[in-house]
Each structure stands twice: as structure tokens, then as C-alpha cells.
Image (cartoon, rainbow, N blue to C red; front, side, top):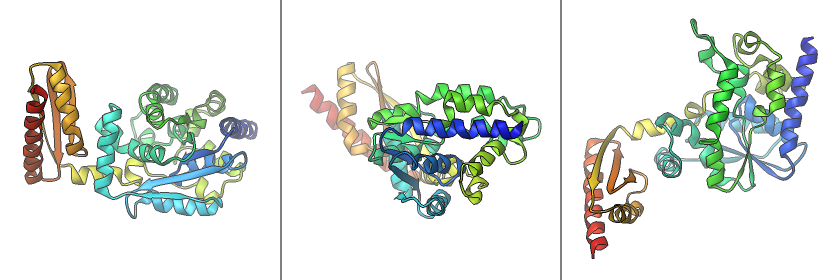
Length: 309
């Protein structure tokens, strides 16, 4: 019975990948089982670009290098310094309204999308929710509901992954969230999927589909840890100040926001609400925070005077 379920799962994943491969694709690649399996299957059907993102010497870059080598595929590495990672986080927040923790783990995906040379961006999103990969599912006292996890992820996709691909005029592909893969995965009980290490049916399917055993059994760090994005952001941004400035009109507030944006990109977030300019300034230390605030206020003063002329 298990062999039959495993065969159905293998076919479902393979077909879900194949259905997207009507032209060349890019895979947001970390070297873990989720992204490596879809990349490995996709290369049977189309040209595939692999993009790995991380800070220097980060876990994901090393994992991606070894995985790409084992499956015989070329790899594009986007090695990004911590300060640049922070700037990219601000750039992403200007386009998409995300919580701080979401910025940390979506940054590698954002940078992969930004650098994609193909119009389809494929990823491994959904595998952890569907196959019980997260360590929290195995914590004592926790009562997981994988179906709920998958449903909630599907709802968030349109505001996160899909929005990111839309910013760069790309099409999003998440094979693990196709209806057939979800149905095939649900033929395995939660206990079978979560187990002691997580994603056991997926690991078995990956080996059956030809993925090297070393990758199929590889443990994976969450994106924010593996890529170094969380450490980059939290090491650099340790202090922040929030305030709002009231102007005579919404037109003036918007003009000032647009005028100051080029000078403050990376360290200052601004948002206009009615006739108020709300600003958040972040820095690595109190001295830098003071300087950034003074510079920003000077820019605001000049922009307001020009706008009123």
C-alpha cells in the first residue's frame, strides 16, 4: 500500500514540475531537498537557471554549491554583504508590506527574483507545511494541523511570493502546492509525514525519482538562518526611531516623501497617511541613528520649502 502511495506522490510531483516547464525557468535554490528536487526534475523538460542567495560563507551558499554539483547543474551565486542585504530589505518593504520576520526569510527569494533571467520563478515553498518539515511540529505538546498550515500558506502567497514575482514581472511556480501533490501527500498520515526528522515521504519520493540520497536526507535551515539574512539585519539594525510630521496638505506630504526618498534609501522608511508623513529611521548604533535622523530632517526641511514655493 505504501509503495503505491509513494508512486502516486512521485508522479504528482513530477507532473507538477513538468506543467510549468513550457519555457526556461529559474529556481530559487538553497541546496535543500525542496528546491533541489524541483530543479532536478525540471532539467528533464527545459533549461533551468539556479540562483542561490546568501551572505559570504553562509550555510545556504555552501549547501547550494554541493547540491548543484551532485545533480550536475550550473549555479549562479548571489553573494551579498550584510549591509547590502539590509538595503534590499528596505527596498522590498517599499514595494510590499511585510512583517519584520517575513522580510528576513523572504529576502533570498526577493533577490533571486530580482536577478532571474527567465520569466518563471520556481521554488520549494509549501514542502515544509505539507510534509511536516518544521521542527516546531515535533515539539512536545504541540498539536500540528498540516492541512491548516497549507491553507494558510496558500492565502499568504498572494501577498508575499506572488507579489514579489509581480514586482519583477515574473510568474510564480510552487509545484508542492499543486492540487495533485497536496492530495498525494494527504494519503500519508500526519504522523508519517512529521515523524522524527520530517518530510519522510518526500525524502523517499526524492530518492525514487533519482535525487542523490545525500541531498534527499539533508537537513535544511530556514531561509533567514541559512542565507544569513536574519543575522545581517539584526546585527546592523539595532536601534530605531519612529515619528510623524504633519503638513498642510496630503500633496505636500507626498511631495516631501518623494523628494527625500533618494537621499535616504536603505535606512529610512516613509509612509504618507492623509497629511502626515510617518517615518522610521534605523541604524546600527545610537550615533548613526542621530546622524541619520538629523540628515533626514534637514532633507525634509529643504523639500518642504521647495514644495511650498
